[in-house]
Length: 451
Image 1 (cartoon, rainbow, N blue to C red):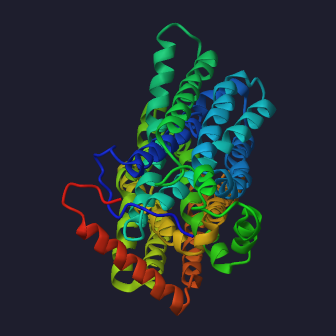
Image 2 (image 1 turned 60 degrees about the horizontal axis):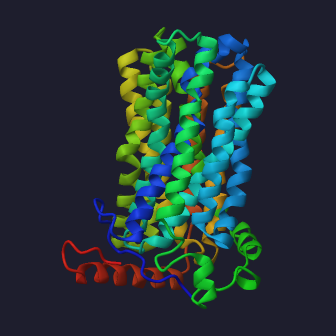
Image 3 (image 1 turned 90 degrees about the vertical axis):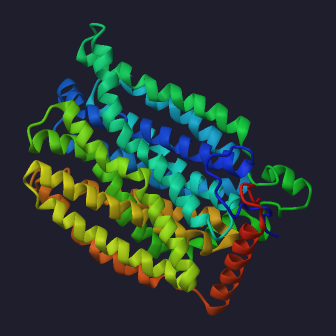
């Protein structure tokens, strides 16, 4: 059995359908999770002085902030299959707000490390975002839907670089000391996560026709056990080498983005002798590219699929990831501020297009184990960030050298995309689904959402 009434069209400025309400709430919730996840990053220069952190200790906190997400993403995908994305997302948002607000209680390197570790769990929100849009939208637009919701969510990583220094400065205007200011500033993202949890619970459903619990009660969806069980689905995904190829691919794009979100502000602050606010604004440009860049990756993935089917999606993924690696190598060699900013923007474009292209492929790997596939591939992004984190904690390597080696690694990983192949039967079946969705979209009256 398959979920019915997936939307073959994205009606961006409409909230009339559950598909579009889910679309907007998934990206908004992911955006706020990013805001909480990396809210402390642009304030690290102040935290470093307050807690007396060394470069190695800062590197460890960066690794901690993304390491736990690997585990949580692996768990969260099967959980979506079992209890549905609505309940999973609501719970993650509510629980995730606690360590975000509580990090201000840290008074040592050890306690700060533990809080960053706990906060990292909200990074698993990405998997739910991609899962929920995948079950709401048809094959002809699912790449665009996945890429746009994830991209606008990732935008939170750039906005927080700009906003949190302003929140911090606003608190200082009331006469608060810097050592207390950064602690109070983190209460803001924690509170908005709680608001997002309430909105998600009230205005979304697991699928177009209702929650998984209700669909199972009506016999429209198999029970989450036996052949349809979360454990069996996870094992099926884990045995598929294509999933692990995408694990590496996603580590080479989203893992790189997470790394840049963590180090960009302090990199520009130290390398170009800038103020904290200026460094934050420049660092934020990397994340702001998500306004359109990741969406472009999904759009082109769908366009390539229209011309060459699933093979077209894979070919595009390889090309854009290769360009990301080359652009990162270029960025690592820049020593003039304005040129470095330009190179970073180009590098950011290809990075986020690669992310969108990756999840333009994911929904077609195993339809019966979508949550498990999304969870494993999503975990690859954080695993990549953990691996990259070791480059930037070393006292022997400069940040520029670390970026150079990271760019070389991305070039190598791009070739793993070519290992993702589909049987002729699967390719033909997905081509039929794609054509059917296009026909359904075209048959709907203009201005009326096709569901």
